[in-house]
Length: 215
Ligand SMILES: C[S@@+](CC[C@H](N)C(=O)[O-])C[C@H]1O[C@@H](n2cnc3c(N)ncnc32)[C@H](O)[C@@H]1O
Image (tube, rainbow, N blue to C red; front, side, top):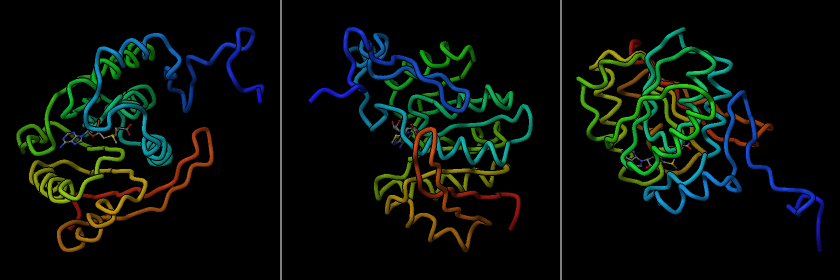
């Protein structure tokens, strides 16, 4: 059965969409098709994950200070990094263990006419000296394996020592993330918000907010 939403010669596929003021290329875009052949990503950085939309919606309601220095950890294609640069004049660095995500991030930074710095590093390699450069850490869907629980717990400790103000992490309530939130009580002042976004890209999950300056 043919439906009106299927691409046809007279109804070509959508190649660029715009959500929350950020343009993104769809999988039908020739640039994405080419990048997928040249840069096969290896740790799930193969698309924009819906937690990014939750994170953008939360930040829309709770904006960072103007010109904040933000580190997006496990940035993947960097949708939230681009959003923060466009909406808040933030200076954002995207960090990811997989170097193959960055051609996608930079293609979208170009499409949105913003500059995003990039850094190839694992969470484990983000030491106090690096973290001390940032006001805010953000991340979407970055706690998806059990071992990432310890890795992120240790990273939050280094962030506190480095003087970072806050970390805001969105997640679709994967078990390692739920377990991570459950062990923060003794060490950090934090809140976990149940967040739902009906549109433009339906998403739901949790938003973890850690205030490193509060005890
Ligand atoms: C599920 S994707 C989410 C990507 C992006 N935040 C989003 O919401 O679209 C997880 C990302 O974390 C990165 N990642 C996984 N483990 C990592 C680690 N130990 N250090 C740094 N990045 C990591 C992956 O390469 C991938 O880009």
